[in-house]
Image 1 (cartoon, rainbow, N blue to C red):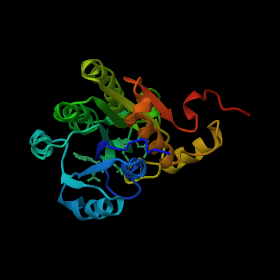
Image 2: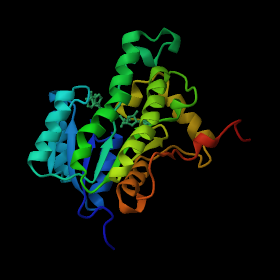
Image 3: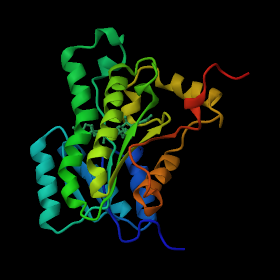
Length: 259
Ligand code: NAP
């Protein structure tokens, strides 16, 4: 059977370690024959991501802090000079200060609000603008979001507001980039224990609640998120844009808890 991403190059931003959703996505894209280009935020993560990149068979591992326009420009210029054409881009990045993920939302500071919006929502716009010229045959841009964008999830707070902006950005970017054949979507993943998730106070209680109440009576496996990312990056997803696709064991449909 042919591989779904054979002949395609996929840029993946947001691997911090092997528990990152971006790592699962990279592994699935590689399994399907993609050429991988990975980025890491800064020097602190360089060795780790280079090692993971070697394990994954990545073609390139480059630095890129998405809060810095100059770094995004440099990434695009490096890839452009090498003649790299991108078919899919995965934005798997978010950040908010730990204190904003543990105290009441009402206490969110102006600076904390702006930081979460900048790294977790605006960066998708900046990434899309930087990479679109490299997607000369069209392709897929994907980001990761969470149910806290539309529902109140205790302690998700400022990140929920950033995810709401991220999801709206997906729709506006899909409208702008659709005529160039570039699709823009988000996967709304169920909670998964990753470094970012550990920053949210009482996160393990959220995992327990999902396992009890989700229609599938379990939590989300990162590999399920990754397989949906492969679908969106592949030609199978060619008609899908501007969408938020839930990969969450069905938790998002639950209202009052079933007996
Ligand atoms: P993760 O492994 O901690 O990944 C988050 C990544 O964002 C890290 O690689 C982090 O790098 C990177 N990052 C933060 N600021 C950055 C910047 N300025 N420039 C470049 N990279 C930056 O956690 P994850 O759970 O896989 O998160 C990936 C995405 O999935 C996020 O958008 C998250 O909101 C979303 N998501 C997660 C869950 C969940 O339950 N885990 C559920 C739904 C959606 P550093 O480590 O260097 O900061």
